[in-house]
Image (cartoon, rainbow, N blue to C red; front, top):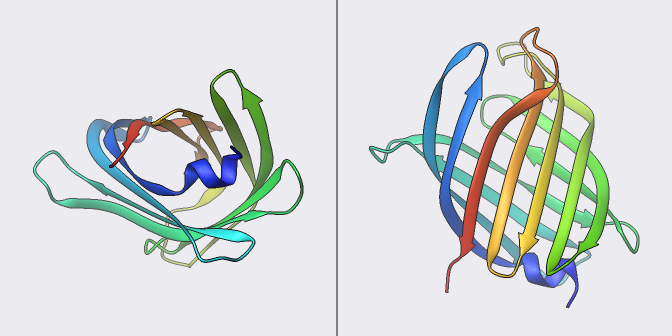
Length: 152
């Protein structure tokens, strides 16, 4: 089975976040990946705090541009957009997709984000997600980590 087909579905689980400029926090995350019959997948991510209140959401497209190359285009309601490129690697029992930003755009009122990195580790019905960023004067570092399971 190829990476594209095993990513399709609804994934949910728990995560945690930290960054030098904010207090550490935990969250519940849901990621939905869908196939529209085109050479890309739709991507939608939502997080909620432990009390159920919404924290973050983003939407985008995961594009496959070669046998092992992928691009991710993401828009956030906070005024930030990302264009990332990366490579799909086969791993024992799964896949690793590591993507680095080639462009990060933001509105005049959004927080300044200079660069991002996203890593997806997929093994069976478990999807580990990492988000790294260089923002608000801080160097590139990990900001979020979650472990998601495929919903039946």
